[in-house]
Length: 336
Image (tube, rainbow, N blue to C red; front, side, top):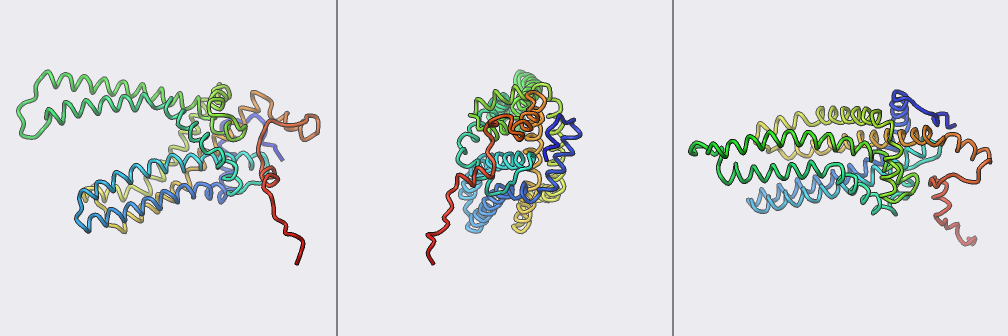
């Protein structure tokens, strides 16, 4: 039943990812559709509020609605998206080991630990990508000071000060160099932490323990993990390009303004993209997590010995049967 619990090549992991995605599509897509549905509803509400502000000629209200919408969507992406990743990770672990899985069971498992998963994602994103944010912030400040406030490239302005031009050009070159280094650093750190979510969900680890576990398990396979992430990114960009290019072109032609029906259609297509792409990352990284445990710890042998009754127990791995045992069932009083 667990013939996949053996060291797998990158090609076999990719094949296994595609196999699980295809055979359990409704399960994984159903988990991601909750996150995608939340974003869809919020986006439609934002479109409606923006149209209401436009019809009332409330320019200030339109700006306020847009800013609030961006903040709320950002929070929803972080919270709902993080929970969807954790739930899909839990479901992939179950089906990979031949255990029953469902959308409800996956969410029931991870919801009590919502704070832990969100804290884990906050730490890993901060450690990996804060240098990029810092460099962008510094360069944005430079643009504000030298380009906007001092009118460096303002139309009909006097010839720019050569000293300011030298500072601006030198800073731009330094920005490109530093941001490239920061991107490389972010990718390397992300690969170190790529197995933290599976470790946290499967082994019930704290955030910091899951990070240490990911660093240990990912050693020796970060190049393979990078190839999987790159392939998933290409698929995501491809789907996004297919579904969104038309709207981007129309928006550019009309100064960023789309008809209401077109904006609504765009959001429904984004819903489909988020639903289809989300499970790919969770499936691939979870399979790498189990593969690394097999390679480094003999997890396949450990499970075989456990099923043969040669070991008393396995490390904590919640299953759907454990959930059912933990949920009281009202069987009635026995009276008609």
